[in-house]
Length: 603
Image 1 (cartoon, rainbow, N blue to C red):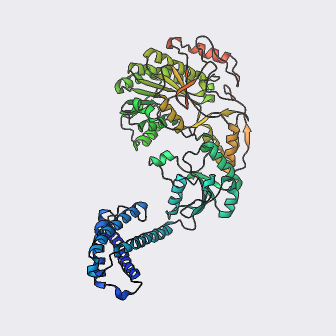
Image 2 (cartoon, rainbow, N blue to C red; image 1 turned 180 degrees about the vertical axis):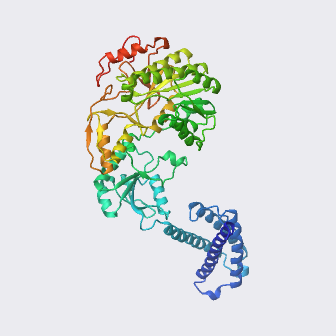
């Protein structure tokens, strides 16, 4: 049977059920009117009214789209359309019977008595069918018994999804919510069992194996509470996608996943202020250096959402460019002009690319970033982070770039390492070019991002997989953490509010102790692993800083972005030998920045 034939068959069956409801209702109305003495009924007249009711119901139902498959079966939209069609028929047919009924032996009240009976019958049939369909669609008995934390909109959506998906690996057996007013709430037969503090007893009563956090903005404090309670109750924790992804169609409420360490230490929901971004990116030619890296590729993805006139992804890593192109364009063919293979150490190549492509906005994310590696090879930091940044700035000036955003690091605040000093100089060079061009050339400074290549979390995950001890530099060492999407959202917004010569500092929240992360990851893995303290490395701080000693900040535009001024330095004052000599002859302990003063003052 074809799809059209099947649809017609279902619509016809639906109409016949409504027609039968009118027939039964009209007979019941007359039976009630004559106190069940059926010998008083004018059968021919009743039959005529039933036929007319059928014709009118088909017309009314067709006009209301009841029999054209517009509505999902048993929804409020269908109930509203059904009620309107039945009431319309009752008014038309009831009016006619009221005028001519006595002439054909029918009481004038017949149709008006029958209308509510017919409507109840039609609604009842739909309700029973919906119960039957939903019961058939429920997960089988082998599905994992699941609790849902949060009885709000997302929790209700998740319950409905799980209860109407026969292939779902999860079956909702209870809700958990801390709001007293939801103590007796019930969604599709799934009842609120209690509060999070009662989780252990709830798990015992429901035999649940999993709890899913269903909150639109589940911050790390909430997730830590749930994880701690779940560990005591010996139950797994899972989370839903962010609400923005569900609204944007990139995820469904049923796309639940395991909780990750990133959720527990860095999930800070960021409200994207599109007005700060649209004006300076939409329709513009935007170039991103380091586009194949963790930060650069995410910047490209977020910039693409604002429909730039052209997005140019530049990197020296062809594999990274392919991955970025795959995420943005849906292919990794590397044959289009949106990908550019070049090294920021090559000034001539950069100038040619900028002259040819004429970018209007530049995000400079290309950099060397591994602190201990650059301590061994400071020359590389100078070539890439200092001279490479200068090359990009000069190419941007020649191409008359309107907005330039230099991606910096918290290591540049009171620097004690080669990485920090090199990025501090990059900030000063950006400020110099801002003064020179009188355009918004600015830097954005933030701390560690979770999930980037070679960062803390992937290293710990790798060690856990190998069942090796986790290495921590110091039991009291702390760092600022933020997820890559959150950091990039703020970087993109910062470009719309920064001024020439400024460094914009992202709100990273409270610093997190690395030992706490290691302990949580070991607990989540369920493996009895040790933690080994290795000692702070050369140039490494015990506690990172976001704001330098001589910097003052304010927040005039965005609640999570601070503004500060950084001194500028012209290229002619760059002195590599002096920089190297002062950096390595001054004492650089691991808690206090030793500042190299003179030709290069890097604080």
